[in-house]
Length: 134
Image (cartoon, rainbow, N blue to C red; front, side, top):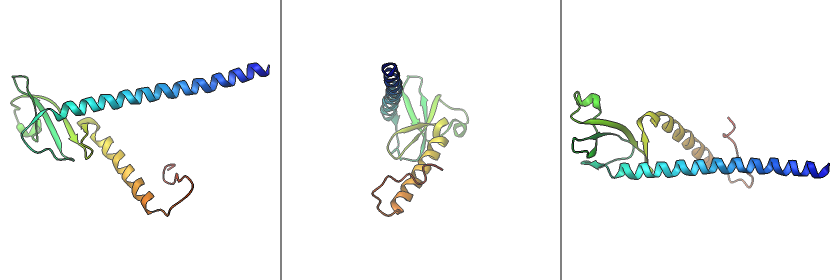
C-alpha cells in the first residue's frame, strides 16, 4: 500500500511538471511569434523616423507594398490605400497591436510602480513580495 501511495504521489508531481512544461512551451511559442511579428513590422516601409511611444498605421498600396503612416484612416478621410492595422512602437522596440495598447500600457504602468517601489526599499536579504499580493 505504501508503494501505491508513493507511485501516486510521484505521478501527481510529474503531472504538475508536465503541465508546467506545456505552459512554458506555449509561452516560448508566443515569444517567438511576437518576435517574428516585430521583425516583420520593422521591415515595413516608413518614410519617417519611428519613435517609441507613437502609434503607426499600416496600409497596403495597390502594388502590394506595405507602409507605415502617422495618419489614421479617420484622418485620411478617404484612405488612398487598404488599411491593414495600427501598432504602437514600444520603448523596447517591440510592436503592440492597437487593440492591445490599453492593456499593455496598464501592465507597463504596474511594472513601473513595482520597480520604483523596489528601488525605494532598503536592501533586504530575504525575498520581498510587497506590492505583489495586492
